[in-house]
Length: 106
View 1: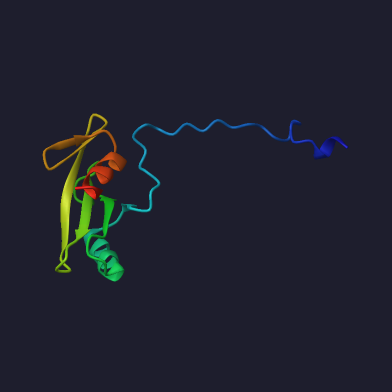
View 2: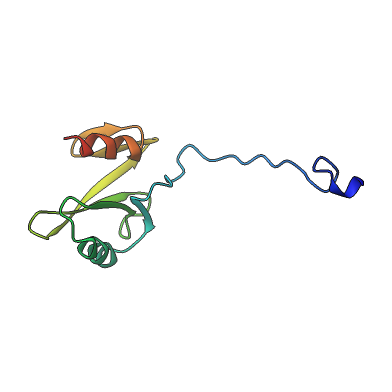
């Protein structure tokens, strides 16, 4: 029966292109999230050293690293995205994943 064939005209292969600057799909990336909700999520996690990256609500195109300190204070660090690279604390990274990898081992 031709209706059961997967290579017939009913099925077309679709090519999906992901832009080089597409946001990561990691669990630490929270997309558009305002500062207050980021703080709530980190405090609910309750684990010092917890962090997330979110899109800046004040500066479109920039990101923010939100981090829960040992004293239960949430700190926010701006990540500047420019020409395909990411800058934080005077350091340059080629991806947000590289940035997280670096600071996870410091």
